Length: 166
Image 1 (cartoon, rainbow, N blue to C red):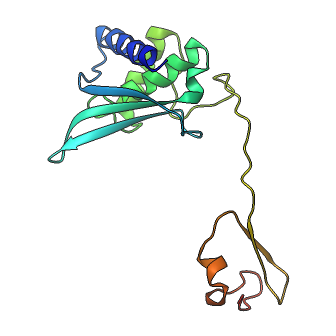
Image 2: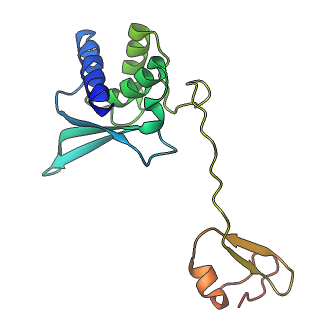
């Protein structure tokens, strides 16, 4: 699957270059990220002496199960970040994204809408493990992870009544 993504990305980059969009020739790797759940793609810069030398593109494993149109949308979005002056979603990036959208018949946005891309992800609700209750007003504080509030409640005051928690 990863080899297919790399090959597909190279083909899309070539198509964009042929259309006059200056996608970088310095994309050194395209990887599938199996841990990313909230973002669908990422373009990372690798700098040498403060200057951008190379790019790495990550695509979430979630996108690999989607149809070709959704996959193309995410990959092209990330490829556009390799264009000069386009590492953000500024004016130049928007100009190139409109050109790419017209060329490929896709809609490229700054942020992805899971439903529009046909992606449905089951929400994994993180379990609340820690509870702290104010003895004065009964305000409940819930935490999913250990944090300073749970470790040292005596250092904190209730946000509702101002009473010391510990």
